[in-house]
Each structure stands twice: as C-alpha cells, then as structure tokens.
Image 1 (cartoon, rainbow, N blue to C red):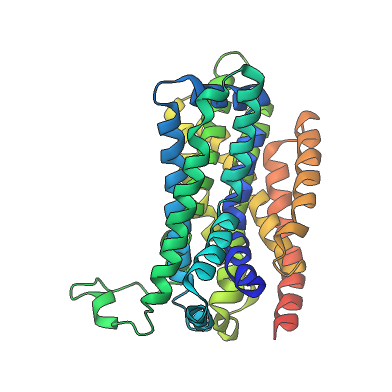
Image 2 (image 1 turned 90 degrees about the vertical axis):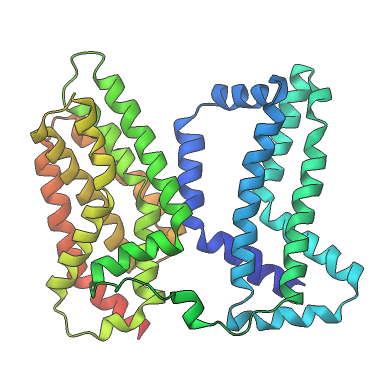
Length: 361
C-alpha cells in the first residue's frame, strides 16, 4: 500500500510541482488574507456559493482522475493490477486513502472554510462539505477500480493518430512548445493566468498616476517569474523525456540560442497585454520584455546546476527578486539589468550545461 501511494500520489505532486507553485504564488502572493476570508464567506452565504465550491472541487477531481487513469496504463505501473488480489472492501478502502492523498488541497481548504464558518457563526451553511468529500473520494476510488478492472495494455496506433493527422514540423522549438500544450496544459493555463493577472493589475495601477518605469519593472518582473513552472517543465522535457537530444551534433551556442528563443516565445503572450492598455510605450515594453527574458533564462540555467531540483531553486529565486527590486529602485537602467542577466545566463550555461550533461551520462 505504501509503495502504491508513493508511486501514485507522490508522483502526481512531483509532476505537477510547477502548477502547484504557480497556484501558491497566485493564491498567497497575490491575494491577501482578507480576500481569502471574503471568498470563504461568499461560499458560505451566497445562495449558490456551495455549488460553486463543488464545481471547482469537481474540476480538480476530474484532473486527478485523468492523471490516475493515464498513469496506471503506463508499462512501469502494471504492478497495480496485482491489487485485484485484495478483497473488494479492502481494495476500495485503500483506493479511498489514495483518493484522499490526491484531494489534500481540498481537505485543507475545507478545514479553513469550517474555521471561518465557526468564527462567523455559519456552521449550518458548511454542512455540504463532508458530503463533497465523500462524493469526490468515491469518484476517485471508483476510477481507480475501473482502471484495474479494464487494463489498457495495448494501444492502437492508428486509432490515436487518426486518418487525417497533419504532418508535424521537424523543429526542436515546435516540439518543446507542443509538449507544454499536450502534456502540461493545466500548468500552462495556470501559469499564464497568474502572469496575466499580475500584468493587468500592475498596468492598471501604473495608469492611475504619473509613475516612472520602476513600478512596472518590479510588477511585470514578478509576472514573468510566474513562468518558472513552465521553464522547469521544459527542463524536465529536455533532461528526462527527450534525453537523446544531447547526443545530437549541435554546438553549445546553438543550444543556448534555441533555449532562449523557446523562452522568448513562452513569455510573449502576457507581454502583448502591455500593448492592450496603452500605458507603456513600445520601447518601454521591449525593455521590460528583455528583462523578463533575462530573469527566466537565469532561472532555467540555474536548474542545470541543481540537476532539476525545483525545491532547491526557490530560495535563490526569492533572494534574486529582492536584489532585482533594490537594483530597480536605485534607478539602474532596465536595459542594463536585462543585458547583464542574458550575458550572465550565457556565461554560466557554458559551464553548467556541460557539467549537468556529464553527471547525467
């Protein structure tokens, strides 16, 4: 049971580390405690508040079910079908424990809603939450039971590709972006949503008075840094999924330029928001875009030194953002900071990429 829980639930949170990092950054970095309390009170007092809460939780549960069903049909997870040797009650009970492991964020938030309800005297409105737990846990347990009773050990390739599939371009850049859309779509959506929210709020506030470029430089830098979850997924794509690309006869300079181009495309969508609000000139938008590219490249290159350990890379990100804020406040030109970040990223890429490649070999 412990091995099954670790191989399933722990793997879920490991693979979705970037997504959860962005969620935490948005929920606890962008929203204050007062706003969290207001959301909880809304769920408790609005006529359809509990229905809205259930829909959000149900969407998260569907996401977990999709992950579980796809994970357990992988070849290395064929051992899970041995659970059919357990009795029915024992098997469903253990699958329910696994389901609660997936639903940990919902359990913690439900406890918070109960605490708010107790303080506000609204405990009578919180009665559906235990029922939601029962329904969602049962849904995940039933999905797990369905998977082991209907193993998909062979895949019809023609059925998956289809008759009219368009040819895929032979492009490293295209394959990398396609990987994010096809395999990390939820992470991509959350990262871009978080970045867009920070961009919009910063630009609206910037347009309310006669501020200089330092305000959007700090705010948009935070928005760009919310893409580090996607940068981490690109690192895993290169280092874990598509490992044979390291044997390709490409110079290290060309690899760096391709990596930088991928990240330039990655942060372009939120940059276009600057053109929508017309509060920044085109030259200022280019400077801030260059700064965001330099910051995200420094994070990506740093992953080569830490061998892709995201938890070891968070503290340098926070320290770096504080240093960046001080540099901006002391009126260091944004373009100078951006150029320095790109040049430093190139310098350390030449060393750390080769070292990471040798350690992985």
